[in-house]
Image (cartoon, rainbow, N blue to C red; front, side, top):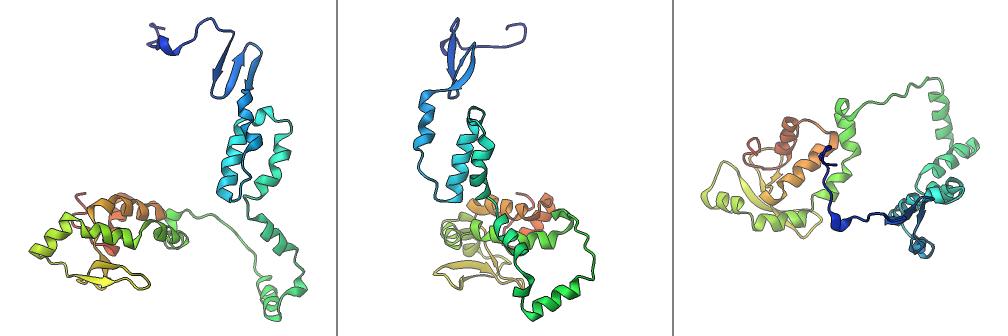
Length: 231
């Protein structure tokens, strides 16, 4: 072991044993088998959401080689994780259930051939960005942004000393939140507190995975981030 640069902690080792317990398995000369307490999956609560079902299937997959015909047994559960059923139903629906306008449209487009190709988000930025726009709502919380602005030292200093920015506190429509935004450009841009800058940068970067300079430009167009090029 010394020859290959390997070190062991003797207090964590078992020598001369005919079987060992490791990662939920009992390993011996006969092979590996799950521990008896691994049967907890038999009493596992019935999943009620897609997230819970994924978690359950992930656990079962850990032991699937010990489950005879596991693929067939899990197939109905795996089917619940797809959205294929509505598509199959749509394809099987009789055409005479279409409205006259829909039928004329189908007749019109039938004269064209289709050529479906994948275009990476990097080469199709607008469509890729719009397809992911809901991610912004999940990441940028106006209440969280407003609270962070209240305790941001840089914003406090700018409001005290003044700058070229035209910062005003405005109400966010549809919420009970007020934010400091810059009015020096046609687009009203919220001021980004230091504590949320990395989060917002990563959010915009994940839309189409542009380079750091392109992401910085996206941020600057939408938010006030003093010294973003240096950060």
